[in-house]
Image 1 (cartoon, rainbow, N blue to C red):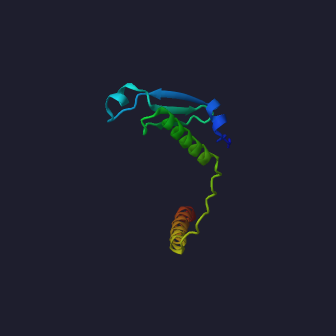
Image 2 (cartoon, helix red, strand yellow):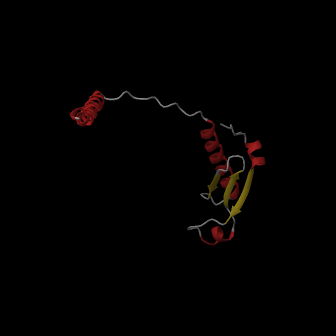
Image 3 (cartoon, rainbow, N blue to C red):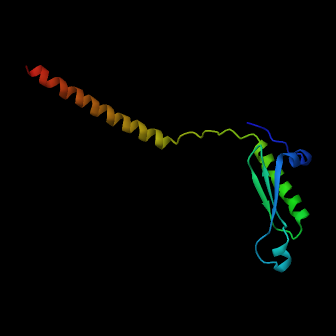
Length: 119
């Protein structure tokens, strides 16, 4: 698994920064100023968006913080799954089904032998 840098200076070189007009309530100022920020991290392909604040610089800081959190989550090693033991009732049920199958198989073998013995 590839480890991604979470240092802001390195991230600034690895991302494409896009600004666009934010949607929603806010009136004329929000509609005419590009305050929303979208960051695309090229090495990992993660896209992060921040549109909460009215200022582009605050949204940029927020987007970089979100990107760092997502990359840190990707960098964490995955935990190994610990297998839980089967319940005893499941084991008993499986053994019972196995006994039934073996009985059927024995009956099939007996029925195949009988016609040959009649001759």
